[in-house]
Image 1 (cartoon, one colour):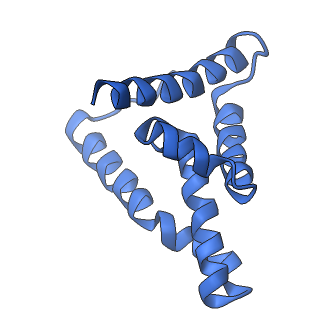
Image 2 (cartoon, rainbow, N blue to C red; image 1 turned 60 degrees about the vertical axis):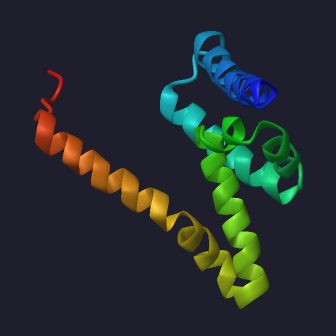
Length: 120
């Protein structure tokens, strides 16, 4: 069990370390890093590489934003198998709908509870 925790920590930590390096040394802003990670997750999924990373690192690979790209990629692959060409357009949305709905719901709840203020 400790080995599994270590694997999760190493994979998730490495993903976060790479993002921090991109922001600190290459001066990339957060939105660019997020888009890069989602796109990288999709590309690595289509190439069959990210499945091996997920098998090794489990939640350390699926929880960060790159895991969202992995979910999108898997959704499109499954959508193509099920619906053909239409699966390209619907597969990713169907696969990630639960996560997107949860993010919207909890974001709304937090906004109601904590009354956010705009930065000047």
